[in-house]
Image 1 (cartoon, rainbow, N blue to C red):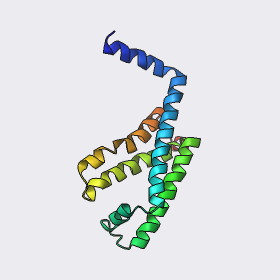
Image 2 (cartoon, rainbow, N blue to C red):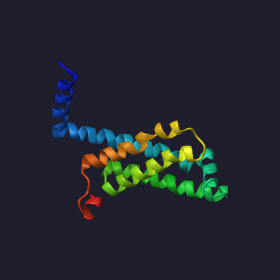
Image 3 (cartoon, rainbow, N blue to C red):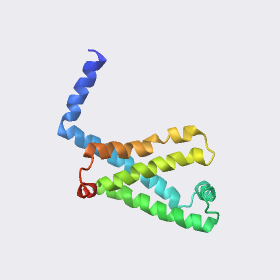
Image 4 (cartoon, rainbow, N blue to C red):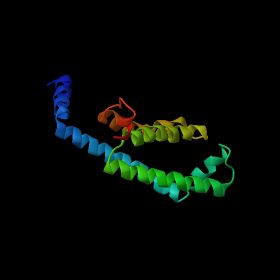
Length: 143
């Protein structure tokens, strides 16, 4: 059996509604884990992250810590929401935020590999968003 036949069989399996639900739940748990983990680091005031704020004009460590706390709470709240109901607008935010926070690494002087290594941070929410279907109306963003 060639690789193309194997791929075709796997695609047929995934087209089964039960397997799509399984893939959706795997993505939901993975996304929640990522955002809960990063949210926890933010709430704890990860020192390295607080230092990054200065590179973007927020030199007061106290303000940076407060902003980081806010970001952490938002990350965890979105993670919980995705576990309860994967709302498309929340997923879009997670794609954009995941991309930005990955891109942030080389912008603050870390190697570009730190950006590449974090592609799953925005790729998983994007995959779930596309799996749920791209919204065709404003109302669909809230479903």
